Length: 65
Image (cartoon, rainbow, N blue to C red; front, side, top):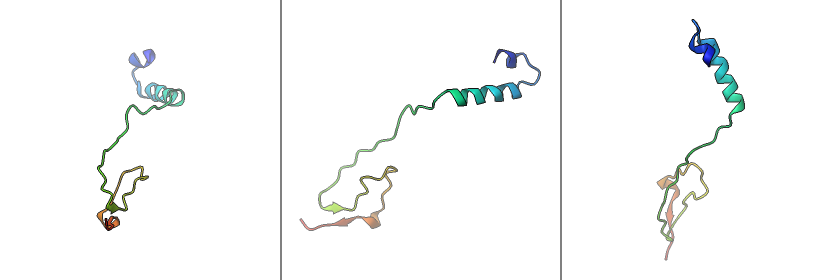
């Protein structure tokens, strides 16, 4: 990094630094998305185990109480 600061063409040096950092530094997510949904017992078909939390009204159905 110090050499790249004073170089006439720092791009190759910055690229090398990026490659070193990418190889040696693990990626750790600092947050994740979560959603609270109130589910009625009479409505079925919610994709509870869906990681992306996508749902479509066509997949839902109502059961008799």
